[in-house]
Image (cartoon, rainbow, N blue to C red; front, side, top):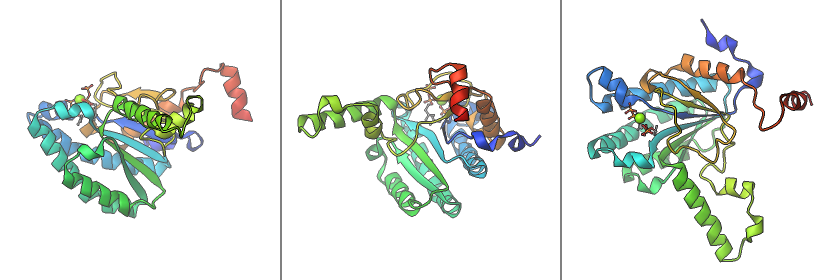
Length: 251
Ligand code: IPE
Ligand code: IPE
Ligand code: MG
């Protein structure tokens, strides 16, 4: 069945965020080391980006490495960083050719130097592309981001360039790592875990959540399209009544 035919182009999510989980379990099922799962996760990213570009989603945000993931065994962290360097090098030309802009959020200063260099090169090369904005969250956690945002605002208050009564939701939005992005419409988590794991806490206030048991290395365009179809069946009410939502849609 071609799932793409069942997608309503009028009701596409503008921004889809993804928690890519289950690489280790995928590898374990095959009697391999965890890194084998991470390596095979790259194809899933590639296919998801292509699928999103094909239907016209504007923003994709991938959770690739959390602040808490630094606590994993040293060898896994090191190999993941090497994999990241290779993946950026291998994937960027194709992304650029397809009009994709690559961005990153998180504590990028904490990444190994080579990784930072590759990332900066790829971001610079693709900075004028507008077809699809792909944001990778690296050394990212939502609480880290909120603490940072609070600090930035507090500094402005301390040096008197801001007064407390000017603090509102727009100001907080602008102080987040995701200042240039709209809030996600849909968040997909793979591997059957039903949690957020410190991802985009501020931004997902009204995001639709979609959980799938598929392990990330097996995730392909049909799973992505299935998530979109599921999203399109839902009614987003934002606290209003069902009939009010229907009226505002007709305006
Ligand atoms: C997700 O897969 C990748 C990262 C968090 C870096 P995991 O490595 O968490 O795989 P599982 O959850 O242990 O199967
Ligand atoms: C979340 O996955 C982080 C990323 C996908 C990068 P984890 O595997 O680290 O999350 P927990 O530990 O199961 O909550
Ligand atoms: Mg995991």
